[in-house]
Image (tube, rainbow, N blue to C red):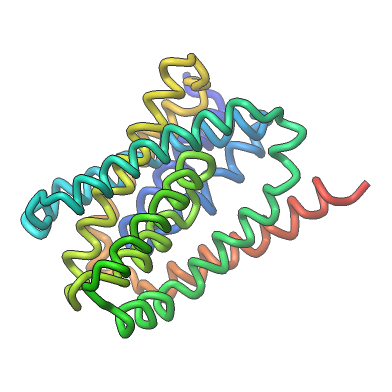
Length: 254
């Protein structure tokens, strides 16, 4: 017999998986649900990281033919992604819950804003694309910081990576998306392995949501053909805005 909390976590995972497949932004749905079940913020963030992590990896496997040749620059980006994800995860476990909750409304608001501006960010970055060495160095530096953020919180990680990669990649959005999914997967794997080794994962919360997210991602792969992306984006943005206000009231008012 499944209790109500487990059922809600599975349902949230399904919705998050569908949202990720169609438009991205699952964390804006799944993370607040984990908090609402009573899980402490840091534990909720870790459970969320475990639950939504298969999304990018499945996308890599589905579109692996679009991945570029493994050259020195891509190897550097992979190493920076792993190191940054590990550093962000370590930072998350160092700080106490009372400090982590303070930026939660801002983090959710920032992720919501990034999600809203994602199409414009991608277009602007695409127009400025360049392949010079200076741009590649800036790309590597920005990626290192982004990977740390990804290991620490991660909402909007794919959007940020897309914008960074567009600075130096050719005008091939499919290739950019493939590399973005690869790097996001490496960040998630590094961070999640650290959480697992430290015994920091609250499995009664993470596992049901993980199962739901996998099912939702599979369903979303089919629903993407019929679900209007604009409607899904509007739902995610509304949820993100509502959660920003709710947690600002909860954590910033005394």
